[in-house]
Length: 242
Image (cartoon, rainbow, N blue to C red; front, side):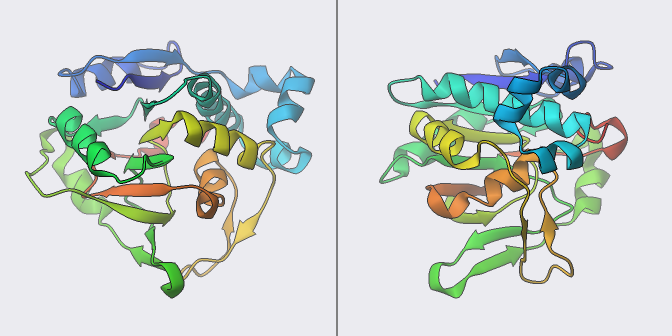
């Protein structure tokens, strides 16, 4: 079984407790998130992860979130093979996550570098349609929120589809090779804007999800459809917004 890591900030208003309650059928390794305000005090380390412009744009929460994910990538990059599943502490998993996710991995002809199991529903998801360009899928955040604690995943046929751009890093698989690729491609995180179909404004790099998405064309990236995890993405309790 593939190891699972949940990123959680120590003492953060019961988020980890809620996560373990929502996902009580699973066992997780808790990865202690780091505070962006603490990272800012370590100038050499800060400069190794973020360009000066990004340091001025990212919130403390976004700095801490990115550094926490990167810390896991560094650990995974040391593995000889295989990978891990990474979750943020607001993710809710499909009760059959283990069987479904490992089944999708086994069906892949070549091991993916990255598989996004869950993403934000309040923004489009873009599939990689090769020569046809990125193709958006729109979701209904209101419908997700209406389910609340009664959310149940339906039994569906799941597929891995080539991924071009996504928002939110609530749940994903990253292979050892994928971790090494992202560390090389993403660091230090620099500020870039990009244009996406049907978006009125350029997408600004204000978080690790955007930094990853801007490099997906250089790795084997996929998304599970339907998703195997969701997040309510509650802005008021988000540690990234702080």
